[in-house]
Image (cartoon, rainbow, N blue to C red; front, side):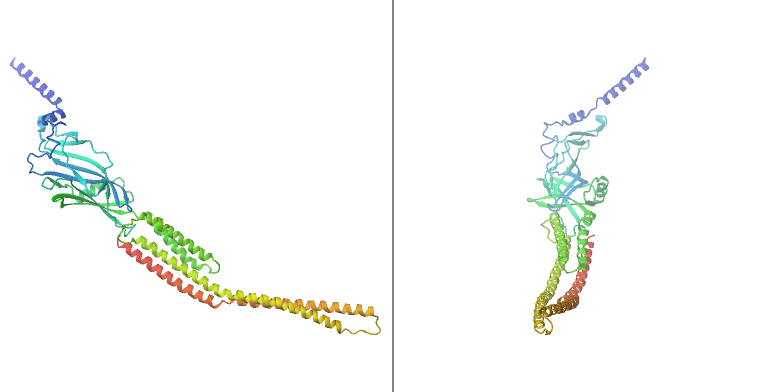
Length: 455
C-alpha cells in the first residue's frame, strides 16, 4: 500500500509541474512587475531608484540604403536601422520563476524612452516607428527602429563628379546632461562598416566606403552632453557624368579644332563655330542645375566648361578677324573688275563710232567712171561697200573675241594670285591653330591632374 501511495504522490506532483509549465505567460511577468499603462513609475521619469545615478544608453546605427543625395539643397537622405538599449532599475525578475521567460515585448508607450535627437535632421522621420519594446529579465530595455532621415550635409563639389562626400549623423539628448544620460556606442567603426555593407540594399549613384563612429562631449545650453557621431563616407559613381557630360564637351572641342579645315570663304565656317559654341552653352546650363550655388570654390567641372568655352570663343573671334581681312582684300578686286567692265563698254562704243566715220569716208572716196551710167555706178559701189563692210565686221568680231579671251586670262591670273591680306590670313590661321592646339592640350592635361589628385 505504501508503494502505491508513493506512486500516486509522484504522479500527482508530475501533473502539477506540467500544469504549472502550461500556465506560464507573459502576463504573469507583467503582473509580477505591476507593469501597466497606468503605472507612472515606468514612464514618467528616468528609470532609476537614485536620481544621482546616470542612465546608460547604448546606440548603434547600421546603414541600410542611400536613398538620395541632393547637391543643390545639400541634403542627405539615408535609410538606417537604429538599435538602442538602456537599463531600467524598476524591471527585474527571475526567469526560473516564470518557466524560463527571459524577455517580453510590450507597447513602447508603456515605458520611458531616452529623448534622443539628430542634430542634422531637417524633416521628421518618414518611416513609421516600431510599436514595441523588448524588456529583459536583467532590466535591459531594447528598441529597434528603422529611420528615413532627411539631414543636412555640407557638400564639397570641387572635384565633381569624382568627389567623395562625408555626411554626419550626430545623436544626443535634447534636455538631459551627461550626468543623467550617458550615451555610448557598442560597435566600432570596422564592425559597423562590415555589417552595413552586408545589409546594404541600394546606394543610388554612390558607392558606400565606410562608417566612422566617434563620441565627444559638448557644452550645450550651459551643461555638458554626450554626442555620438556617425560619419558616412561615400564616393560618387562618375561613369554616367563622364559619358553624358565630359566626353560631349571634349568632342565639341575636337569639332572646333576640325573646323580649321573648312575654307574661310563664305560663312559656313563661322556658322559652324557658332553652333558648337551654343551646344557648349546648353551643357553649361544643365550643369548649373546640378551644382549648389553655395560652393566656396569653383568646381573643376565648371572650370573645364569655362576653359573649353573660352577656347572656342577665341577661335570664333579669330575666324571673324580672318574673314574681315579677306573682305578687305576682295573689295579692291571687285572695284577693279567694275572699272574694267565700264572701259570695255566705252571701247565698244568708240569702235562702232570709228567704223561709221570710215564708211562715210569710203563713200566720199569712191571713183566713178565716165563711161558707166549712174545706175551701174551705184550698183557697183554698193556691192563693193557690202563686201568691205562684211569683211570689216568679221575682222572686228575676231579682234573683239581675242581681246575678251586675253582679258579673261589676265583676270583669272590676277584672281588666282592671292592678295596681301589673304596671304596674311593664311599665316594667322597657321599660327593660331598651333597656339589653339597647344593651349587645349595643356588645359586638358592640367584638368586631368587636378581631378586625379582626388581619386
